[in-house]
Image 1: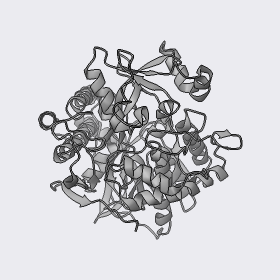
Image 2: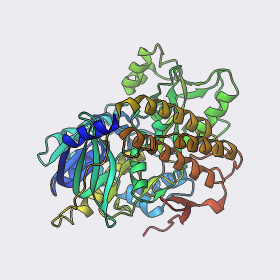
Image 3: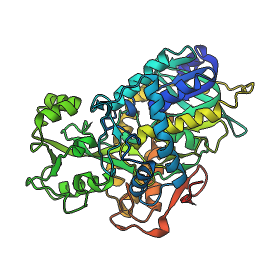
Image 4: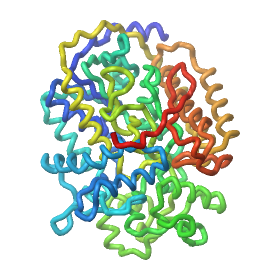
Length: 538
């Protein structure tokens, strides 16, 4: 059957399409990069599902940037460094906090509307920030508002062509230079080639590789697998940020309760109705996310219920309804009174590490750029500061496009031929594998880890890999292998880091260890190695 399907795919194969920029991924990083790049040439915007199905779109919190006279980039810098627990690269953080305000101003000039109060930005406070610097749009739907804003810009631009339901399956390279991407058209089940003078991967993270996640189900690390296979360097894959508060439901379908809810004064209480964060951290519920998530995990372990409560009954109910209309409505649909208390539990939320880039989004492969959550720029360190992710998309997307736009010489791509086919009978096996991997990751590389769990988890992944079909050119075999690559990279890096730091907690090594103040680098065909943290501002 496989050969027949392969023949049919060859018959309907679209030869190729060539653009100045090929941008893969439709979160804020991809949309913003496409819009900026359209000023320099033709752009293909390629996305795995629909243009509105991304982490950026569902982001509730906000976007962090200094806009208030009582705040400074130096304060934002310090908060980011503290949250990163010793692993932030100072030069990258400095770029973020100094260029962020300018990028916000440009968005406002383009017509983006952020929430206002008495003629000024209505700034929020979130965990790890010591100043109110979080801009919101529409209260708790900032991601949707800013993403929709950029989508309208993209759709109205003649230089940009949108390709939905197109999944990137391979980075095309020639003598160490990226030429574009090989793509699987999910509607026609055929392979397509997108050639580009410059290729941007903005495919988001990998948190949907876990059982409980705040991410769309498609966020399983496609970009990590693509870049690893293409021989890019990956950094700090052990750091997965678990959002402390997602609505607990028996079905494991998670819905994020923004950190801004705790910023408004909500308390975390256990099964006995006791606040438990006050004795753990000076900032209580507004402690860094890793501390809050670990504390909730331990509290759940001590009680019968697999969740704790986020209590808002001491707050003004009208203020809650006005400030968080979407969360309020979601709770209502689930039979939960948000003005009383919400059952919550942690869920995988953000991939802190990723593909190593320089300060212009450039990878170790020429003409291949990575931006957004997929990138490891050195900003996040061991633990992302709340609401730094959206501003990172804009700041580094801008820098990457500007440097690429200066190099648009004539381009004659080499010739590539189609090589993949599909056997639809393997779809169910892929879904079953995805479920097993989610269980393995949750059990063996979750919020609290140890060497025994990690080694066993890695062994289980190797067993799964051994059971895969050997047809490496079949689509479902390919994405199954990619899933195992991503899971393995997280496990291996977590085994290597024998300490607890930020989003990586080892109960067998519960303290930070200064000998591990470095980035862990993984690359195909090489043993893990380390790179020093950059602690100067150059």
